[in-house]
Image 1: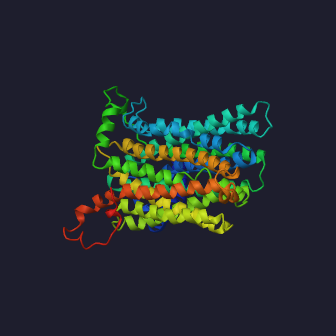
Image 2: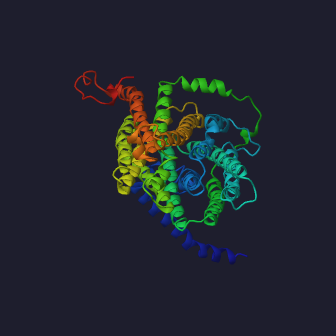
Image 3: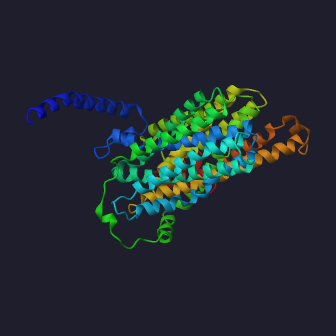
Amino acid sequence: MNSVGPDRSRSFAPTALWMRAWTHAWGKVGSRYLPFADAASVELPLGRLLRLALFQVSVGMATVLLVGTLNRVMIVELNVPAWLVALMVALPLVFAPFRALIGFRSDTHRSALGWRRVPYIWFGSLLQFGGLAIMPFALLVLSGEGQAPVWVGQAGAALAFLLIGAGTHTTQTAGLALATDIAPEASRPRVVALLYVMLLGGMVVSGIVFGILLADFSELRLIQVIQGAAVVTMVLNMVALWKQETRNPSRSRVGTRPAFRDSWREFVKQGRSQRFLWAVGLGTAAFYMQDIILEPYGGEVLKLGVGETTALTALQAAGALAAFGYAAHWLSRGTDAYKLAAYGLVMGVAAFSAVIFSAPLDSPALFRIGTVTIGFSGGLFAVGTLTAAMALERNGNAGLALGAWGAVHATAGGIAIALGGALRDLVSNLAVNGSLGSAMLEQGAAAGYGFVYHIEVGLLFATLVVIGPLVQHARAPSMPSDSRSSSSFGLAEFPG
């Protein structure tokens, strides 16, 4: 027995040394080139942080599948009305307002195993898997291959969308709170931001992979892709959870838990949190209203194929990923998070203008440029507001703070998606019937898409008005008393 021990240790020694060298090398690369990679610490090394972030990759994959691939296929290939698809994509809105409650419950959860966040992430993963498991059967009925009425397929698809949405909301809220628990207090905002980088990275990779797999489109191929996504989701989330949260026996004790209503009232009283949440809601609606119509716009107006339109989601996510890198550069130099979000709003106006003009110019290239810029500007707004949201956390209630941001973000996004599809159908039908005049009649279906994009531009300007005083409030303590008169006109001077 004694002779076996030394031999085994010697056989494993080179492997251990190689793993330490590999981790050290990637740590240097990550700290220099990856956005927010300096969030790694002794308590939360970069390898463990990146493994935890795999739950964000699964959420990004589900987002691309629902908002990107399935809405295009159901509208264009399966001839499902756009308003119905928009309603399905917006069904996760039912659970979005509960993200604050989910975060609060995970803050105060009593578990026999001593866990707070793990049970919520696990059940969220099961909901995601269940929705992805139901979706193929619903698509079979919608395609005419099943032995059931069409309404059964529509109901099944709606249930699948609902389960996937509920799962992603639960997993994401508890996962972000878990990351906040593990990370040291000083690096928590950057840890959460890195997790969103992984979300966008998952969207980019998933969009590229789905685009390649669906280039030669068929209903059977789409079903296989969805089934594969279900398996990958469970694998990623299980690996992400492994040995992340420490078991605490004190969490299994029965005790008095604070009421959610009291905790919420205390939270919204902090500083200017209500104005901040209004800005998050309006800005999110401005960027999300086009999500349901982006790929159908490319397919119906610019005549792009399924693979080309699926790749648009990857382009948009790549723009947002670049925005996170840009934001990391400026936030590390003391740039105000609210000002960064406002820059994203201004860039969004130019991005939507490019998309609007791509139709009369018949320019897919301009459309793709606008899509990338939408991702970049939306990314600046997201990381700016997310960084600001972390400053709202008090008394260790990270789940409540992140849940509030996520609830407003998801609720506004869901409402915007539903309105985007409905307004597109309404205006397009009126334009095609000649009810809006000869000029709109010539545009045809493009009129509905353009109407939605113009509304989004208006929402961007409204958000600038709301967020202006927050920029002023954030920078006021550091400004000299006589500097205001000499400063140039900026976002802080917008009316509140």
